[in-house]
Length: 492
Image (cartoon, rainbow, N blue to C red; front, top):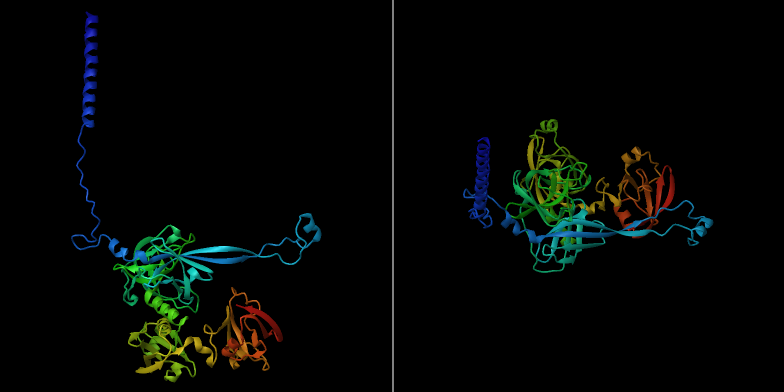
């Protein structure tokens, strides 16, 4: 009886497992036979706006700009001097190693150095804006368009003081961008940076205008003209020279540089040259082959709160005239030391750098209306600007405006300089007041060196010195540490 009961229970248990297994298979089989899930797909591209009118895409806007953005490849030949073995001149050493029997310095080796940057086409006939540092020293420049066409580009001109350069390619009916008025941009405006960072291909990044009128960043040197737009749109190596574009697809700046951590990567602090400045420099380079800058002939400084109170001017307004150079435009117009310039042609002057920038971007010979305060009285003067490049005509040369050649700045010797440098009355000429350590001439022309003759011609003004210089070898008679000596210097 027990065996029958055990058998019966066993059959029931096994039978239950079989039923459960069959039910499971039925359910699995049912899954395989189900119809595909019904999902909703909208394959239409974004139309750019939400129902509330807010933007959802800038693709259409950027499509107008992207064909005009180019990649700039520069090439220059670098001379490399081979390291010379200390026994290289030993005859036994040379015979032992099978070297030719020759003495003297080894022949230099040369290599090609390649650079990468970006640019933007601004005219149908092929003028391109980019940065000076992208093409500086280049022996050859090639431009690659968005449609993969490549051209050898002519360097029309460049301006290190603003880091602007202009290229030209020989092609007609090219895509081009539209320029905006960069004076009208505001902090918070949406912007896009376009270019070819790290040679990965054309790239667009998005951000806002973080600040305007950034000066004294020190990116271009002490005597440069800085007035940067700051943005957090990602800018990296290779972006230099590409456009900074507003939300309507208009160019407002030329991407130039970033402040970065030690890695050199982007941390959201990028700078662009305002397009008003860039286009002004471009037109001057195209028309004259150089940048023609206006010159007022005054030394100016910012008004500190104490000085503003002393001169009766609101803080953050105007540029204080610290010195008027005799017989220069400002002097001829009646400006005096202590005047505070607050307007030029109706535009407010908030600082000394703003005045310097505005005057520099005005062509020489232009008459401008200047509003200034003297002893609390508001006055006006019409001034015909001089030419900054023609400062050597007369009068004392001034630091920052008196470079004789690469990295060497000089001044005319006057009584004050003669006293400061303890110069003998028998020493006349031009004295070196600044010698850039990066210049190849710094060792021969240290600060305090007096240049008395160039190529056997006495020189007492910057104009005389420049006229005496020639391409190739030049002979200088200089006075250094109490003695006269001759130097031979080769200039490009």
